[in-house]
Image (cartoon, rainbow over the protein chains, first blue to last red):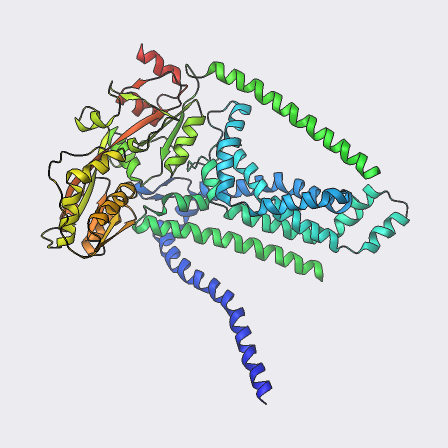
Length: 285
Length: 297
């Protein structure tokens, strides 16, 4: 009797713990949207979403340039980071000599542990001058530099998730492919890699999420001019850096507009996750 | 064995690729070096909108017209003095501005209208690109602790801390003597004033061990509104009080001045600029260093 009562009490404790994470999301929504929606309505949704003119001192709040900036950087990071990350995982699983595996995987996990401000400083002192010299531009800061830096930052996520996806593939399909006469390389790239594609896709989603949300590193190397990006080397301001740059000074409508930026970011990540989870569900059926 | 050979081949290929990339970088660097300092596009760096330093800069160089900020839209923006310094110290084409108290050897400050920013030139008023640091209180407040701290700041010992920190002191001949008071004091506001205020509070607490001073960093606007609301006993501002703030019953005291230095890369051959030239650079009217050299000769 006591046993069952204790068990049912513990059930509530566990349910409470599980509810905490839901509660956190709910609380964030409760803070974000009541602040954001009135601001968007006051500015006018058309101006807010479709104007690239951001001049808060003159009450002009168009965030299109920042949305474009965030998407450009996420795209750049994925284009640079995903091929390297996935091929690195393939190497670790199928090609790496046993002696080298430990140092390689250790280096990658170390990469994940570096704080983003350190990445930012590395980018500012190493990548920015390098890009400036390579391309002979006025300043090395911009989309290219930020994308390279973000690619480095999402690499550990992509590698470790892709690696575990590859390791989870049924070893029988490898043996079967070899038995049919396919070479090692052919088997890896045409049999094992496609079998792990769902896991790799979730690696990419997490990578994009990190790239869009990253702030402290990007703010140091992006140039931060609130203009619509026109080339790979032009400076860029993202949604996150837009918030951090001005939050400490903003008051009134300006502050609300910055909170609205956060809400837009939240919705972008939400939509992305929903899209990918719906694809996953379709695949399972 | 086979995998090992393959791995070696990959390694060799990547090393070759890297060294090739390295070579091309080197040759580019050489050409960039020969071209620098006399010509080349100007990389313009500014602070973020709303920052006190940017506000003072735009006002002093008349970059604000009808409330419109004329700073060109594609200027690089940073919200940190450290990033500004690092960027200018690395980029031979860069120009930026920082508080003169934060100047160091990694960058070169230029003279404005033939006056170089030093503590003396700001103090005697010949270097005109400067702004006041203020403390604000409620008018007619009888807070004894606040009065005592204020008299410490304005005394010889307080002002010597201010000049030690690289800011420009005001005339002070009063000598401070510990009051023997006790209690708590809250000071809050401008992030530019905070570092020096922390030093002042530390020294003040050494003289008055029974008084606790907490310094809270926000911004000038919050410094003023917080003092009106009574959250802070003393507000810190890095700009003058706005008329609407004065009408809410605040009075201010200048505790120091801070020059704003225009900085360039040490390899840049330009040593002085006129106010008009700086303005033209920041509006985008002048976009190449060579245009500034011709003007100088």
